[in-house]
Each structure stands twice: as structure tokens, then as C-alpha cells.
Length: 114
Length: 114
Figure 1: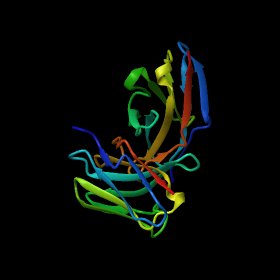
Figure 2: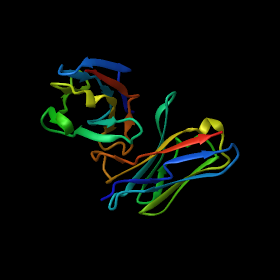
Figure 3: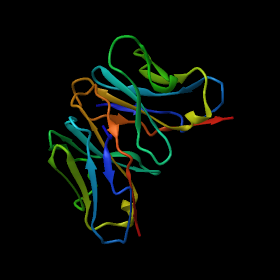
């Protein structure tokens, strides 16, 4: 079985400050982990993914995420937030070789204040 | 490529009417997913096709919902008869097969059933 949790419904951060959006997961095998962003009235858009290799993954728009196997986490980070980063962020997981269907978290609303 | 195309973008109908949502996946992608998004329930997977064959339809709410994929470039999601609780945003997403591949989402169809 696979599951993912986003413990925060909303994250507030001031523009220019670093941001972190949290994600933890549970899988039976090895995880394939994804982050997506959804802007208002739009579909989800892929940001980055971890498959294997380097634990720090860099993605679009200056975002990065760190895979931590011992803590089963895949937190999304950005060194300096922009107001335009305000959106809904989804973490998703697939169990290596066991499922072609991803499980999505409930989403975290990121609000960046000017 | 134009990305995943969905039509219509907005649909307003009356309870009891038939609704058909359409999706054109990205050319070359052989996996297709239909999702429903609401504030209350978040993002829900309805059905997953691989190579035009329905693989997992366990998320289809009830017999009022049906989905087809007659060829690699077209899929439909039909609701008959529609009910007010079906009001949601419906997304189609496509990807290459394989657990490590990210999904590409369409812009969604906002359905309102009066």
C-alpha cells in the first residue's frame, strides 16, 4: 500500500524568505516521489520528481526537494519565496514496480505575503 | 505539443441531464487518468487507462459514471443522469507508462449541476 501526507493545509511566508512545504510518505517498496503545483483555475503542473540518485532534486521555478529515506519525507523548498509562488502544492507517491497509479496528498496552500 | 486538451472548459446543466466530458491526451502518451477535484474531497482518481484499456475504475463513484477510450488520442467521461453532487472540476491527465513518469494535466472542466 502507498500513502502520502501533507500535514499543513496552509503555509504562510513573507516574500524573500525561505519556504518549506512538507510531505511524508509510506510505501512497501522504493518510492517514486513527485511535486505538482496548481495555480487558480488551472490544472496541476509538474515541478520535480525523485526516482533515484542524489537526494536533493532541483526542479522548475527555483524549487527543490530533499528526499530523506530515514524520515520518509520529501519536503519542497525554495530559498527565496515570490508572491507569484502562491498556489496549491501537491505531493504524490508511487510504489516502485507495484503501482502505476500515484497517490496524491490533499494539497498545501502556499500564501506568500508581499 | 499543445498539451492535454479538455472540452468543454465549463459546463452548466440541470439535474438529470447527460454530461459528456472530452479529453485529448498528449501524443505518444499511453496512460490516461480521469480525476475529480472538490474542496471537500480533494483530488480523486476516477479511472486509469493504459494503452486504451481501462485498468482501474475503482474510483468511479457509481453506475451513473462511465468512461471510454476508443483510441489513443481521445477519451470521454460520461455522467448519466447528472446530480448536483457531481458538481466539481474534472481533470484528465496523461503520461508515458511507467511508475517513474510524471503526469501532464489538462486545464479541467468545471461542471455545475443545478
